[in-house]
Every structure is written in structure tokens, then in C-alpha cells.
Image (cartoon, rainbow, N blue to C red; front, side, top):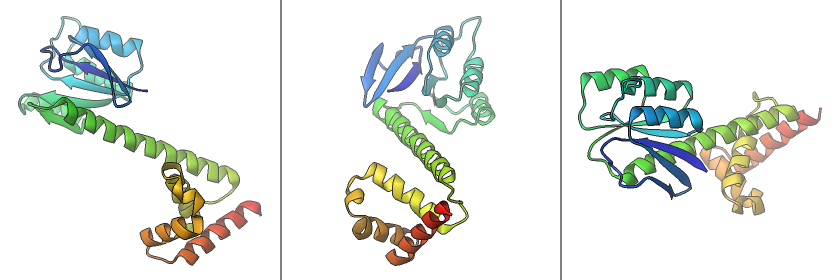
Length: 195
């Protein structure tokens, strides 16, 4: 399950913990509590409210630094675009920035999109590693066709039942070629693996 930490001081969301669309969501109400939770639990995403109450020990800057080191996707919420906020966004390369008012749905839809992107990148890397292990070089066109074919079959079971009828024509359409050329390239890549 995807773990999300919401750091807020003004109770933007009026709940303490919930499960929403495959995400377990935790809340911190000051910067020290947020840092403590980040160190105790592994989070995939952090929603950070800029106006978060800062304790004497921990600042928003330190939270961003810690999230950056832990490779946590950070979603930044602020009521206005201030110079200090912009500097932090650029320094920590935060691309998910929301101006208030922002809805719960809007924030979590963005998190779902980022999560899906990360899963796709991970799946693509794993497939590439597997193909390399089998001895298929990525320099042949069939490598990318096989990689895309496996990805499509992973997300759409229908393609498994109609490889020549659905899958090859789809790949051909995406690559501006013919289904027979796709099949030939895949066969060539597989032959290289058996040599």
C-alpha cells in the first residue's frame, strides 16, 4: 500500500488517518512530529503545508532536506507564491506545487498519477533487466517491441489472448510500421537470445 504523510498545522484535512484509493494516509501537525514520523516509517509521498508550525528544533527547510535524502515525492501546498517558497522549490526540485485553496481530491489525484508513473518506470526497468539477462541486446528494434508488448500485456490481459490480432497491430500503429515488421523484429531479437 502506498504510504502518504500529510504535514499540516491548520487541519486542512479534518482527519487523523485514513485509507483512500489504495493509499494509507498519516497526518503530522507540526514539523517535529513530521520529522519523527518520516524517520520511523517509510513514506512514498509527503504533502507539506508551507505554513506548518515550526518547532525550535525543526524547520520546513529541514523537512524538505530530509524528504529529498529519503527520495520521498514531495507535494508542496502554500497560500501564496513567495520568494522564499520559490527558492525552496528550486533547491529541492519540487515539481508538485499547489496554491490554496486545494482540494483533497486534487492532491491525491496528483499523487496517484506520480505513483503510476513510478510503477511504470520500475516495470520498464525490470523488463529491460530480464531481456538483458536473456541475452537480447537493446540495440535491436525487437528489444523495444518486446518490452512494450510485455508492458501492454501486464496492464491489459486481452492482449495475451490475441498477440497477432491485437498486440502486434497496436505496436505497429505506435511505431508507424506494419504488424509483420513488428513480428519479424521480435523473432530476430529472440533468435539473438538463443545464439
